[in-house]
Length: 126
Image 1 (tube, rainbow, N blue to C red):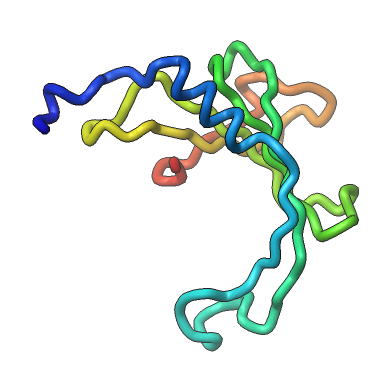
Image 2 (cartoon, rainbow, N blue to C red):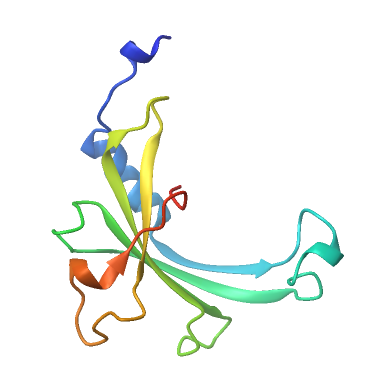
């Protein structure tokens, strides 16, 4: 297959299927699976965490946006991480779907969310 035969746009059905697949509440154990214990601050920690993933409507960010929040098991008010994932309509050069990760800026408005309140770090795409 040549790159010219790879679709340049991910069709909506594929992005809808990915949103549907990812949405839900996950209960996982987090632990070190690669590297050495000396190299990781997580080495001595095995923690049960929950991850809640749901679709949100933010038209200014895209048509296929997921909100992801992660917290220690059974402690939803102790949020560890919150991100937005935008499943982009354009595919990468190798035909893969591109998913951009956004986080809230420290200076962002805590009572509302606008494009000026979020940022995406280069290299943090999925």
